[in-house]
Length: 477
Image (spheres, rainbow, N blue to C red):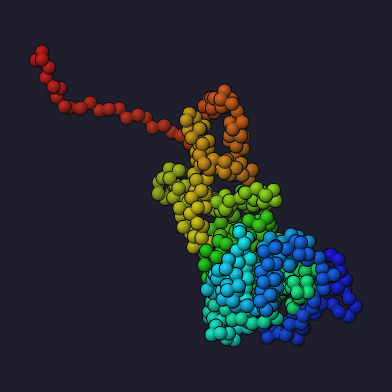
């Protein structure tokens, strides 16, 4: 994989030992970790590729007499040859002690107390080594629900105990600036070389502690193109409903990580294969199975999102959620129109409200995203209207560009017959004369004022009824 690494793993008689021996493969926290150290000359993690802010945190903690390591994704990605973006520090200093060392920091969280140290726009997350469940530290004890869900976990421990408390072996690699070596207590280096994602400890127990770990397994498998170890994958489909007990606000953050990290399409496929997508978007999952164009629309939206991220172009969750929930809106609209005897536009508005209300029970959607999303949906009813001032009002709408892209997506997926998107493409390019001609051409054909280009029936004007009031007398009378 990189200089010295495979050689280190293949030394005769000294292949890496995992955290668990064959007799205690599911020992979890009761296992005794065996540390392996990868020296500086046998790995490719360079301080030049690490955050200067993260290094400042490490050096200051070390200078104050504390142990401190870079840990997690930043080390995993560096070893894979990728440039890390987020940097996490693990230390034996408590949150209060870290707070005293850094004035530019604040303690966050109650369930897991951590410290955010801010350097301008960059935030370095500092966590205290976690200890074993059931033990007490400075009056702190861990708490679990009857189902095994961790409710509170602020028990501090050693770096060895912290390693076996992390989720996956490849995320439990520690880098020290005291010797510039990588310390591995769980066999993560071997799994990294084998490109396998393996849960530390008994997977079912660890998923019950925190069901979001199932989403993390899907995300890392998609992002890293790793296979999930059979014993790690086995309980996921059965335990997927545990996600329903996670607060919607937290799941919203997880959805952003899944779909706005550059691997949205593959994440979507991994989630669906393992029954996890239905826990995040239950109505969407139903609609995807019932409408032939829906899967293609969602997958194309996710592929476009990945492409924009690769090009370092902006993306918005409003468009993403709009695509994920649009099949639900389209599925509900005709039913509401029939049941409530409503025209298509009010029926769609009512369907949108119902879809969003149901979705909020699973993942929160802040109004700064849900309102633009609804604008995009409602503009789908305005785009077929290509006459008079309506055209320019639509063109000047703040969400026009997103709605136009959404229209192209609908045509590409097969939901709509192509044609309207091309008209709007030409209209945006045309000069005044060209725009008048395009509107005239649209006006010369069948009326296109109705939703989705369907002719709209025009109501006859009401005639004024003659009044029976007597006329006022004139001078001639």
